[in-house]
Length: 164
Image: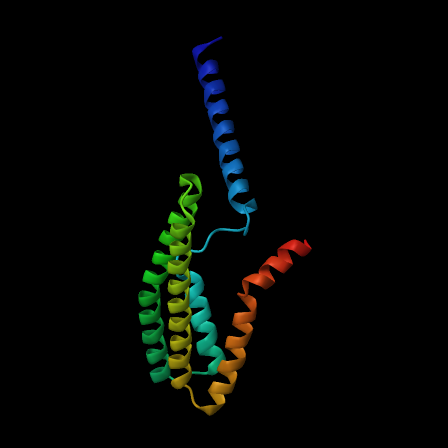
């Protein structure tokens, strides 16, 4: 074979493999559980924030206060999520370590306490958000929060998964 012909075949093979690799990676990315491109961290939070601001028809002062409260809440709850994740990691590490019942009980108590503190932080946050609303907005806020809580209820998500 001539040099140019070999070069063309090699280049063609390379381009075909490149296209196939891109197609496979794209397929894996799109067909993964959850589908579609992943959200960047915080992107869905801003969607919720804009939705609530729009639904409640908040004025500029309320929007500013609302955003401050959310920013502070997210910053404050990060620690709880991190602590819970670390304690869960230790708990499941205890499975392979054949840990005593006392240490497992201690870890589950820590997780429970942190979860309780997290739930209290969420309640306080929603209470603060509600306090910046007028009476008409409070009624709408209550309906929105109730719908949101029903959507994120883990038991409902499990029921939907098991039904499929």
